[in-house]
Structures are given as structure tokens and as C-alpha cells.
Length: 266
Image 1 (cartoon, rainbow, N blue to C red):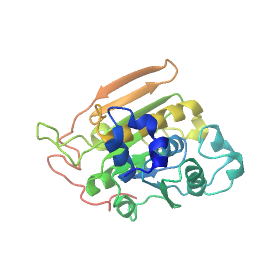
Image 2 (image 1 turned 60 degrees about the vertical axis):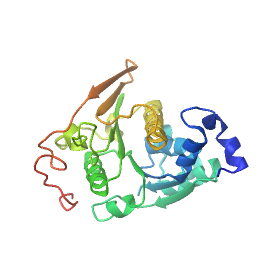
Image 3 (image 1 turned 45 degrees about the vertical axis):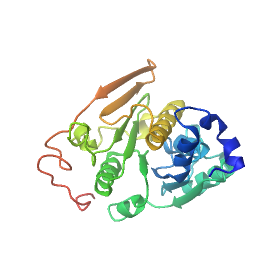
Image 4 (image 1 turned 90 degrees about the vertical axis):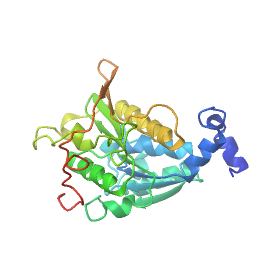
């Protein structure tokens, strides 16, 4: 049962036919792992907390710096030097005390990934490198946990949902992250954020869309992004959707699976 305070807090959700009381209760029961409390993770965490997600696990081993504040809106100037997970937890608690926050001030690794995912209903990956994205995706497949993953460039971004452990209505496995990106770009070909720059408001836009996709997945309305890559071009303010399918040669749920654990990750 939602308390009187929660009924008022989430009133604008509850009056939505697609959400209602049952949908809001589903959000409260949900436990979500957010990888990264930076440019994408900041708006994700703010909007999931505001929406009433019951438990938010946050994984990030970084500290807040002045250059983060141009886009990482969950942190503030007095938080400089603090651990990002602690700064984020404090902001979430101030926004919505009904949300339980579980901060993990560490880097996600092959040794801890499955333990961190265990018990979570959904994982949102806002990391900034391909190594972590592949690790999170493989771990979610092994743990049979849905994944929402996004990538941010200087003026572009992309977003998709991965349910590779499940089958589509035709009885075929859904595509994996490795179906979309079979191999990571060669080292040095994708410049880091500090080199290429990033439009702060774009991070907020894409992170908010990740949160919306998470809410849709938990409540269960609309058409999700499984097998669809949403791409944003902020220069032209253009949105495009690319459909992609399972690659029979992918090493996770392909015709000859080769990845059964996380030992192959560095």
C-alpha cells in the first residue's frame, strides 16, 4: 500500500492510465542498479528517485570535480572532492526519502559484477568506455537481468534496451550488445570526454530518456527499445531509430556460444 504522502507525491503518475496505482507500486518494489554517477547517471538517478523507485544501487569509484558540474547535475559545488556515490545518495535522500540508496564506491569488475547485479530487476549502464559496456552487458546476460545502455558523444548519443536472455514471439533470442557492436573500436580512435568535450544539456536529455525507458520497462507500457537503437543528433536535433537483430555468430546467445562466464574480461 502507498502511504498518504506517497499518494500525493506520485499523484501525477497515478492519474496516468498507463501507470496508476499498480504501476506506481511496481516502481516502489523495483531495485535498479545504475552504473556510473556521471553525465548520464546523474539525470537517471534524479528522475528514478523522483519516480519512486524503491531501491537504487549506485556503482562509481570516482570523486566529484569542478569540471563535472557542467553536466552532472546531481552534484553541486560543495560536493567537490566527495565520492560521487555519497554526493548522489545525499541528493536522492533530500529529493525523496522513500527511496533506499545503496552506494558502492568501487569500479565494476569481472570479480564483482554478478554480485552487484544480484537481486536487481534492471541495470542501467551510463559508463563512458567500451570495456565496461561489454562487461555489464555480458554480466546481465549471465544474470538474466534486463539492461538499458546508452552512449554519449560530444553532440550525439544512443540508447537501447538489451534482453538477450529472453526470446521474442518467434522463439528466437533477442539480440545482445555484441550483436550491435561485435568489437570495440581500436584504442585511441574514440577520444575521451576531456579531449572531445560534451554538451551538458545532451547528457541530461539522454539520461532522462534512459530513466523513461526504465520506468516503461518496470511498469510495462509502450514499445520498448529491445532490438532498436535510438540515435540522437543534437546538432540537427534529429532522432532516428535503427533496428538490429541477433547475430548468429555472437558469443553469448549465438549458434555456438563461447562466453559462459566473465573470465575473458580484463
